[in-house]
Each structure stands twice: as structure tokens, then as C-alpha cells.
Length: 212
Length: 167
Image (cartoon, rainbow over all chains, first blue to last red; front, side, top):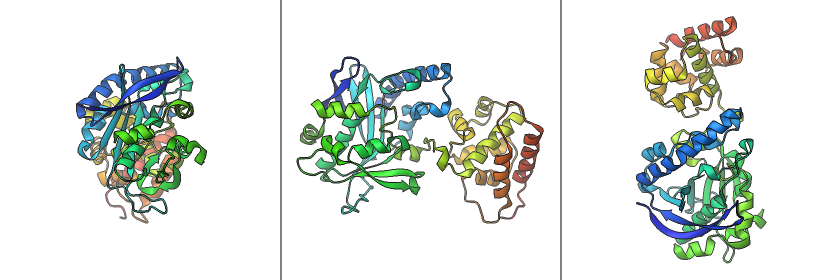
């Protein structure tokens, strides 16, 4: 079973107040099955509403067909570090990162170790889907999980370096979080590779919005 | 790691500011794992021609036989989601087994189908390349096959069925 590592705050959009979620690590295949059991019906509900509203499939959320149960069965969990944000309702978001074999591409740290974010997804009830007027229940989950990756990078003595391949819609968001866009990577279907440089002392990424 | 989490996790105004930027369902979508698992839908602007051709061929070939994707999924035991992605031209990482099963079902040359699916590299001078592009350009998605679509499909299938092409 997964292990509770910490707690952190996110924003409950309805009340406008902070909500506390658990940060869990070392997720097992069983945990991923629980994620799918919880998210699957909610995802299906959103798809049903999108279909009823005649929303063109190209405008559906990118993750409509992702199935965590299937993914977990094909993952090599021992080489993947997993985190989840968990509330009383269940899993709210999942992140997978790797500490090898990825290396920094950003000068002057080219070739140095970094934490690579392989995947982040939030629960369907935390999606914003304007075409069916759905607003997220909790916000701030993605931001906090990126901070978890930075914290892991620092604790691994990678000085806060984090890399990822962003989907096109997300590039601006990552740039705003202190990541540098190094352009399309032909080995990853042309997705943009972004990297967050080594953290400056006394300047966590919470201030990074001002970097851009 | 706890000390670092205490230092880097957001609170107060920083959290409010960060949360306000999460206005879209895909603001933090990351693609590394999805590429590895072949689950990513490549934007149309970057779609390689083989994805479009393969998808269009599948659609017309099954419609010509009056088959639905569900029929094909059960007949060849291929995941329905993968078939949908192929037909939508989104299957940039198609599975070799799927190509083989479809080749058997529709009685076409597996190697030719592997080429148009983008599974194997096309060879310079292969007449299939030009034919594939013409096929994609001539065929439109409609309820029934028009005479033009049927002619385009027949011509393309003849090429696919032949293994005596220039390699």
C-alpha cells in the first residue's frame, strides 16, 4: 500500500478556502486500480455530458481515454517514483517521476542529473471543461505536485532541476512556473521539452511566476 | 525529503496565485509517459502522413464490408480505443500486432500495411508512398462509399495486396 509522506494545501474552489490533502508515495498497482475505480465513472459521466452537448471529440479533454489500470499494468513501477494527492474523497491527483536516466539539457548544467516528470493527471472532478460548464472542485494540485518534484530534486541533490515534455496546451503554464522551453523533441513526437534550472537559494518556485 | 517539502510546497498567496493559473483541464498535461505507452494524440499539425492514410484506409475498408469498429475489435481481438485512435488519425504509435491482425482480416500485404501505418520506414521510390497520399486526398468521410471513394479504395487495396512492388 502507498505511504503517507506529508500534507499540503490546495484551494477548494466552491468555498474559496484551503483544503488539506495527503501526499502519498510508493503507489502500488493496487493503488492505481483504486484510482481507476474512482476516476473511471467520473470520467464516463463527463464524456456522457460532452456527447449530449454535441461537443466535437477534438475538443474533449486530452485524458478522456487514459485508463490508469491499463497504464499501471504496463509500467515498470520499480523505476518510477509515484506520488498522489489523496483526500477523504479519494485520489485527487497522481504524478510519476523518474530520477534516471534523464539529464539536464539547459546550460550551464547540461548532462547533470534531474528529476523528470513523466506524468501528471488530476481527478476528472478537478478538470475545467468549459463546454459543459464544469469547474474544478480543487485547484492548485498541479502546482503543488510540481513543487513536490522540485523538493525531490533538491533532496536528491539535483539542486531543483526538473525536466518534462509538455503537451502543447500546457507549455505556457510551465513557462510561467519557471521552466525554460528548449523546443520540440523529435524523440517524443515533437512535444516541447521544458526544464526548470537549478533552484536559487532562498527562491523556491513559488516565486517563479515573476521569472518569465 | 520532508524538510524540502516544507520549504517548497505552496501556501497562502503563493498557493492562491498558482491555483488561479490552473484554469484549463490540460494546463499541466505532461507527455513523456504517454509517448512511451502510445497513448498520446498528436496534434493534427504534427501528424505524420501515414497516420492519416492508415486511419482513412481502415475507415473505408471496414465500411466497404459493412463493419463497425466494434465488429473489428471483437473479430481480431484489438482494443477498441486503439482502433478509434487509428481511424481518427491519432495513432502515431500503432501496435505491430494490430497491423498484422488488420492485414489478415482485410487480406492485404502486412508489410505494405506496416508502411502505411508508419510502423516501418518507407523506402525511397516506393510507389505506395504517392498512392497513399493520393488515396488520403481523394477519400472523404461519408455515410456510404461514393463511386469515387470505392474506386480509390479498390485501387489502393490492389497496391496493398501486391507484394511485388519496388522495395
